[in-house]
Image 1 (cartoon, rainbow, N blue to C red):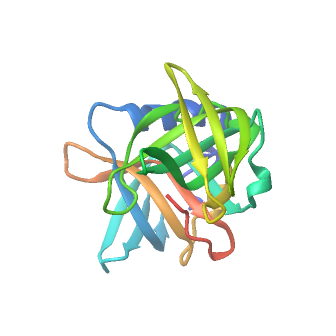
Image 2: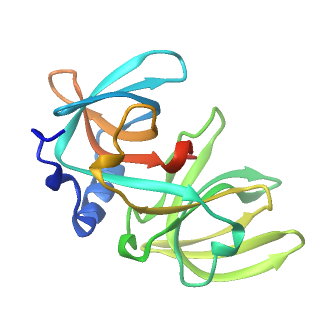
Length: 204
């Protein structure tokens, strides 16, 4: 990737704008989940679970993020988190929780539909105002611009740390989650790539 200009990919402050713009753009983004097959200059090839390989062009300001395993103890008052939740018994229940590095506070802030799995689910990126223990769950009071949510986190929810990454982590064999848009020429352009550390599959 030396010809691409790796330095353009890493700027955590600018990442906040990039992620929010991708998440809130008028045209729905494409979410590609799979394994990086190859990296060549401006292009990352990702093989999905269905066996197809998508060639994705990296935007000039594309950002790289990483996820690594964490425990439920990482979920604390004042942390900025991203939570994918489903509705069970009339309440929102977390499937996964991403605990953001403080430098990424505000990334993709809001509450909006997500596409993890086949059933309806939501993504909530917000600040934890309060954590309560209810039975075996942790119930989070979440604040974000424009609203609040209450989401229960069961003991079996997946919890990961979400941190700024480096272009060096874009390499064959890495598990990845890509947010991309389809351009006028029909090609996919990535604004953000999340890579799992040490073979971890990004739970997104």
